[in-house]
Structures are given as C-alpha cells and as structure tokens.
Image 1 (cartoon, one colour):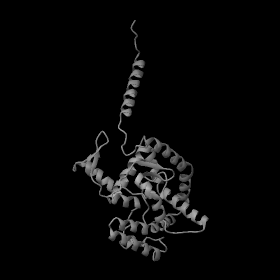
Image 2 (cartoon, rainbow, N blue to C red; image 1 turned 90 degrees about the horizontal axis):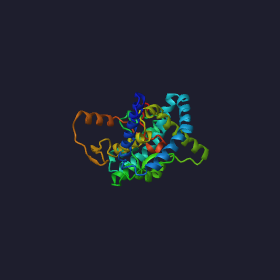
Image 3 (cartoon, rainbow, N blue to C red; image 1 turned 60 degrees about the horizontal axis):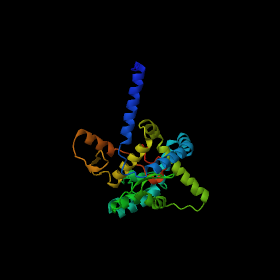
Image 4 (cartoon, rainbow, N blue to C red; image 1 turned 45 degrees about the vertical axis):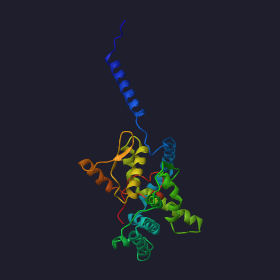
Length: 285
C-alpha cells in the first residue's frame, strides 16, 4: 500500500537531500596544496585563538582604552625604530642598498632628533618606512615557501618563515636589557601594543567568514607573497584542482583585485601572536 507523504514530510526530505548534496560537495572539495598539515594547524590555531581570547586581547583592550593616542603612537614609533637596522640589513642582503641606507638613516635620525625614536621625523624627511625580514631575504635567495604551519603563540608561518623566526626575533629588537623584569615588561608592552592595533579587525574577522582558520591562512599567504615581491607579485590564479596557473591580465575584476591588494596594510608577523595575519589600520605617525 503506497505511503502518502504530507507537505511537511516532503519539505523535510528536500532539506535532507540539500544537506547531503552540500556535504558531498564539501567532501569532494580539493584541499589547499599549501596546507598539508591542516589537521595539526587547525588544532594549533584553536589553541592560539583561545590564548588570545582569554589573555592577550583583554590586556590589549585595556591598553587601548587607557593609553592616550599620543602615547600609543610614541610606543609604536619606538619599537618600529628599533626594527629599522634589521630591516636595513635584510634590504642589503636582498640587493637593495638604497633602501638599506635609507633604513639606517631613519634609525640615526629618529634615535637622535626623534628622541630615541618616539617621534618619526625620518618619514617627514622623506625616508619611508620599509618592512623586510629574514624570511623575505631567504625567499629572494631562492628558498621555497614550504608547507604552511601554525606555530604555538606566534601564529601563521611558512616553513621557510618559521626557520627564519629566531633570527628575526633577535635582529628585530637590538636593545639588550640585562634586567629581566624590565626586559619582560618591554616585551609585554610591545606584544600588547601590536595586538591593540588589530582590535579593529576582530569584528570583520569574526563576521565576514564561516571559516576563520582558512581566512587567516589565505590572507597570510597572500600577504607574504605581496611582501616578498615588494608589492608587485606575479599575476596568478588557481584552477579547480588547486594548481597555480598564469592569470590573464586585463578585465575589471583583475584591476579591482590588484587595486585592493595594493592597499593591504602589512603586519610584521614576528611582532604579534595568533592574529598576526589580520588586516589592520595603523594610526598615523
């Protein structure tokens, strides 16, 4: 005897069929070839995100609320000035002596007339701030990216950038303080300040994507590629199997994408933890 289905039962069956179709589509989606360690990376990303939510972000929010804007600008300028000698060395190693001497002149000007770097007078004098690290230097020397990996506390990296991180951490902070409490306080202030600059991106990161992990990963990889090529990366796109193919130039969509990429604010990944790949607008210096 045939079974008569009610309209409600038909709707439930249709919904289940749609869900099954979506699930099969997701299961057949190609994995990102740059992320063969995705299982481990997602677990570490969740750990870092938990540390950020419970410890780092609340401290950064308190700092952002209490510290006046001139103080935050001065703190950012101070730590940015300490990084300029290392940035200059990496520019020299990458075969860019003009940029290297500019970085070293920035450090000289800001450390003297800029009151130990609290004022960024070098930018006003026409010496732009650059953003280089040893991971980029290795890339210029021909070292490949390697797999994408999420480090505990430090966040997203490629294998190449992870290998360069110890040198970047050492070279990026030439100030040597023997007094342990003072040294730890300076490190905590720097981490707090950098995290505070990312607070404006939190809502976008939470609301603009269903998969925060994939969003951060893709943004980080795009950001690193942009920085390695000094803002002029080769035009590429990926086919449906994840293979990288030359991207044809031209078209409104390509022009809009390239313009959006050129406006990205770049974050120094050695100076911040779990959310280092998120976009951010820095205060004017």
